[in-house]
Image (cartoon, rainbow, N blue to C red; front, side, top):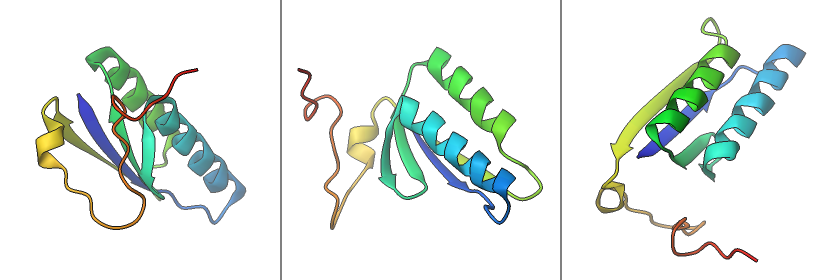
Length: 97
């Protein structure tokens, strides 16, 4: 299932900068960055549970925000892209050497 994850992490403090790095890394472990704080993650239900738990245990609900958009398995018909940074189709455009 495709998940769109967005975040706004306060990075005014060293702790905030650390949270920002960790959240970006967790998202990159499961998906691709499509904008600075936006990730597309094509995950199984089990992977989603693990990723969500990591994110929710890392962010600070007093200063940060996370948004999760469940696009499901038929997401290709629901997403349009225009402009720079052409979208990558993880199933067609990936070359494994």
